[in-house]
Length: 430
Image (cartoon, rainbow, N blue to C red; front, top):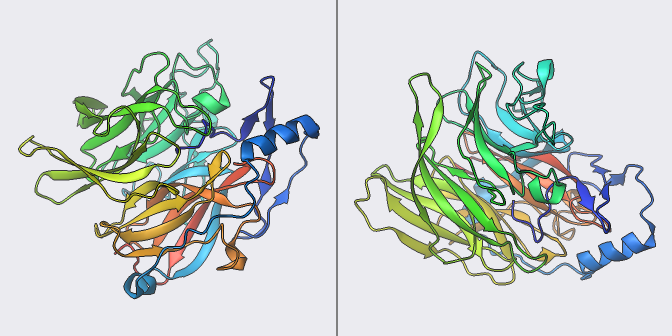
């Protein structure tokens, strides 16, 4: 998740390095006004600091988008429910395994930064990476090894499409265990791993150098290609996200079933800016398209990078939209291959007031499907202080979108996050 500053954990680092948790709770499935839980008194210096960060911009900018009747009909929202609280990063699991027969969604518990699974209704929850008997019974190799941190944060899960293996990112040996730096949603000093849910075996896929990072990666629908952003320069708060390049790798498997990456090439089609891969789509002919967002400021625009498996075609890069006053992110292709979902919204302090949109791949037909930041449209679903989305995932039939919804607070952004399921009355993604 790209943030206007490197923020991603539930803690907030305040002047002097003190970490304070600000937590809110959703009291209804439709995002009614949040009810605060008791928190330590912040004091006026901290409040003033928070107000400075937020910018206190007052009203929310208007970013309505025209929508066509066709997409409006099939993408009408039937209901919006909360599946998991204090959780983020949902990804749909396409296979059914005897090892975990009820696992349909893998996600990140925001309290402990461990990976969990649940069914499509939010039940039958089980931790995958918790230490000892609280997980699969096999500890993460870097946990409890006498180093600091004892327990490493894990996040950004990505299930392989045809076997019970979850790819994810985790703090590596270089991590300082700092929430606004090394948490997986920021990804500094993180590496990619694979976890076999049947054997409990971990496999390390990357070995980044000290002070390198990665965030959410993109995987092709057949699981063959994986693109991750190698971040080599940090950003500046409220100015930019730093610099990165995109690494293209093919997924291979050893004789014993262990996954491994074979790096093919890297690309930075826009030069030295920030890149975040979102999703990969194939037309079946060997030509693939990476949908990603990039930019040199805090407002990222969507692009498409085309290449061929066998290098038979020249790579090409296409800018899909130019919206200098709006941020766009988390482009995810629907099962139909004809629609995609994405987040859009203006900047608000350290975060964004961003909602969910569904469109055709060329952005010509656009449908806004949530209104968490506009109480004039759907008052029963709006948030008191606004919010933004994270990590989208479609159900196989295209009828439901799963995502994390960050709720902003009165003084600080990213107060809490919950996983939502947005159910459509028609086959929106089919």
